[in-house]
Image (cartoon, rainbow, N blue to C red; front, side, top):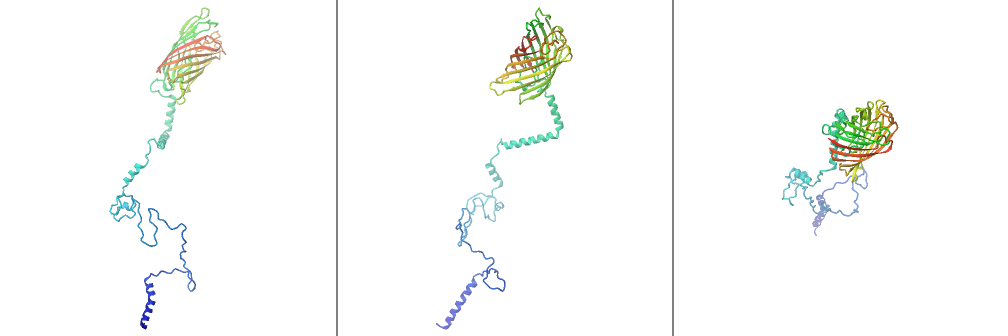
Length: 453
């Protein structure tokens, strides 16, 4: 081989690496930690540490996401969820470009992208969202709370006038839906029977009550030696409100019939006039209770022959309480009435006495029609009068003004009341003595007829 050929081969061998280096990019040299002028093995300050093999293995692609980038090969396109366009076209609506939900019109780039309006989304949510119930307890509670709050605010603005008016209405009462109309809130009660002039019904009622009492006198009574005392007349009550009423306790005549051996003769005349106001101070609709108090004026307006002219006046304050109980019984409920008072004479001519009446009835089947009745009556004479020289007293029929201090009489009565209607009632009771000095009381039969408004 000629020498010139060998020289050409050597030049090509020397120039080939330089040419290859010229074609490759030159990587920047990492900075070193050596200061200028020193020698040694350079160490790069930011050189990344050698990667250790992963303990979890190679990454695995998750469905719906892009697979990990391979070392070599083309990068696959990411898979977009159905209904959304991750790479909207330039001419797509503005709502689509900001991520608004779009309708799925099919696959492929040829289909137009149509955004879903906010009204359509709201309608879809409204159809699928649970609707509030018409009887939602939370809504009802909030509504009631707002109503009460508003009511309290309105009261707070006029508490002086409103509170004063409420108190006046509570004291005076209402007119029961009409002038002189009875209080029909407690129609389950009935009035006492056997002690009609003193045992008062606590309700405010308007009525006319014709009344007849037939009482026999013991035959061994030293002043009368038997006979009888009869009352015939009426009672009347007028209700002004459901709390205030005026009561005519006794209005009528009296007849005294004795045996021939007695020093008193048979007489008939007007009875004393008893009347006075009554105030129903408690009306418990929920408790089934009624309570009243009153003052009775006993005015001696009758003739001397029937002992109705004793003294000048007696004042009788009294209270009466009625209560319904055991109303859940299957066959009916009970009503109890307790009345008590004291008779004060304005002078020494009349006798003073204390009285107490306990009434119990049974409302059969709670129909307010038929009531069996049991009653107890107790009278105790506490002072002597100085009008007549007799050792007896006549309880609720006659005030002799005699010398009977410390004597008392307990009687019991059985009977019943029938309500033909609430405005027409009939009652009757038979009464006998249980304990104490009988005076002119051997037994008594009482009958009444109630006409109530």
